[in-house]
Image: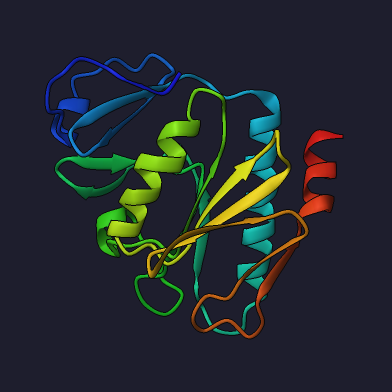
Length: 189
């Protein structure tokens, strides 16, 4: 479960000393977060979202970026390393993919699929962190409610969507439109 451990200030460098034990480790403002392996519905949602985003980005006439999934270290600072379930990384230059996050230093989109153990962190701490880091769009996929939550740095309000969600990254010929009901049918039914 994603939970803070020990009352000390963790850094990204401290993660190098942790065991490779199948858990996902993140540091958020000096707090160590440990997340065990996700459930199968969670993985199905991640896989489908990755496929939808990848297909959309491949259809664009102008290069925008690439969709990737965790585990992948997104290091914003020495005290802030996250591993979004799914994210879009911009290209370094025209159609040249980044070799590491530091090549571009930003995300175009971050998405987390909720688990009971990660809901508070995803909805509060990560939402705040992504907003502070200027991530243009943050999605939370809630499997229980069958909704997407959308947050953007310019607006502290959260949109809860259950019919359709759109994404219009800079340079896209047309917006991505996801039918939320169809998404959850594919993942859960």
